[in-house]
Length: 359
Ligand SMILES: [Fe+2]
Image (cartoon, rainbow, N blue to C red; front, side):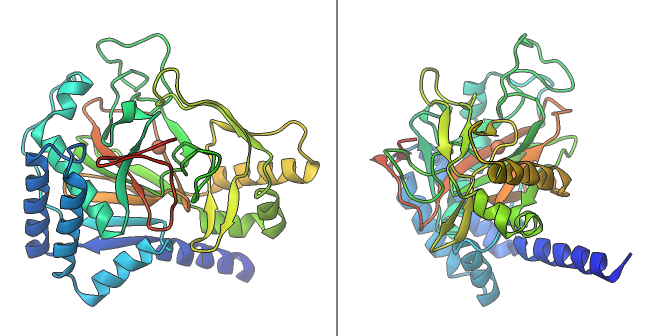
């Protein structure tokens, strides 16, 4: 390996090390978190009125038990400077093993262990100053989304395998690198659209075959494609197709958006989806080349892999990292996901409690 290449590899590794951080709960802290999660689940979980302030109080209480180093790590994520924060040392929620065929979505969503995981996610989001929320036009307006092969497309067929597979987290299909929709803006509301989620948090109810979640931190990719291409990606020359998770009849394709933007508070913010974005036909060659270079940079990046269980959770900074996954191999896998809105974001609020935003 030449010195220059070695330097590149080392720089990339250093970047990744700083971008993916692990927060370890000690036993006392995780017992306290578990107690708060159970109390929140008892009132109905994140969707229940009052859950927002209860999660906030729980986070404040937990912070008293954290060391200086732990507080600094939370602050680094909260300030937008980390791509992924992984919480480890969490309590196991249930010993119940997954059925061979998953029940329907509604019965899964109402399980107490699911509510506990969702409640715990809401509190963990609050530790990094993110508020759990839902969009009016996505996931039926609900805060909690179960990521599981409910609609087919996995390696193994489900009972009611449909002909046409939905390209969303409710299917078993592989999903290429993306940030979460909507894609109109990344930090500040624009033209009546709230920004993309600032964060998404994931934990696993069941992941029997230990299938990993993959994340691609963007800073090393952007460093590699260079400043001129990055500037071209800040122009409004890109379009996207409507997401399959949107409420039927709501949400739409979008035009004339940028992929990157400079933001005074977090530096840069990104929106991108490898299977929904494209460059406008009438864009300049500079912009088309920049887009092709980004796509290539993303496809060449080595994702960081992490296998979620009940004892861990992962918060992904949705304006600084892409995530993706392989086709689902074990149909018993169920993840619990919630979106978070950061302290820096401005949004169009429809209701405060539970927090519902116009998408
Ligand atoms: Fe996703």
